[in-house]
Length: 229
Image (cartoon, rainbow, N blue to C red; front, side):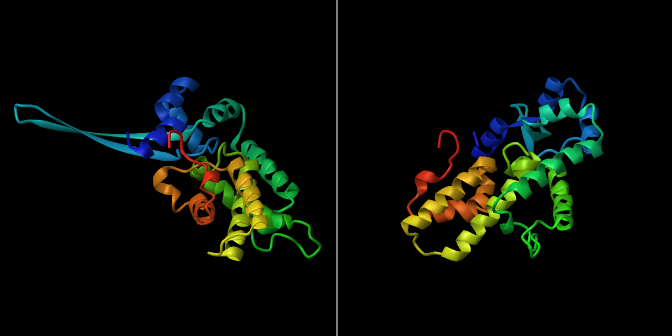
């Protein structure tokens, strides 16, 4: 089986199964997306089957399957009694609290801290609104483990910390104390971040800011690999 299809089918759930497990129709599933109670699908696989026979005939069948993160099942159950605004507020509260409490929040979102070191809440609210749109598009189903507000905040900080580390050290080989810092950053990133599908990985935050520098410093053993790799 193709590695990308294997990754998606093992780690995500297709819309047919979502409907079957949640006991809802496809129309109800689409309404949940439209009503902003669950994010859109994270992946779509389009397949074409070609049937032919010794009679010299053929038929072409096209099929599209949409895949959601498995966490969507809990969301559907939880959000049947919520409005979109209530759900958004839950995600926002998780995001804001996780961001404010993180000791490294100065790395994320340019100018997010005031001169006194406190978080500029107006700017953080604006940042959340942008993250909310990414969330609804299904992006955080791809790049975080569970797509929670907490993970979205932690992922942003972890990525920006890795970017700063890469910018500082460039292509230079790391000394032991810097390797230890990279190990910490690696753990922080892996706590909330998915692997990404294989075709995406090299251009993802994981590929650009973590895999590359780990390989450069002969630390490939720290790289988080796919099952059976």
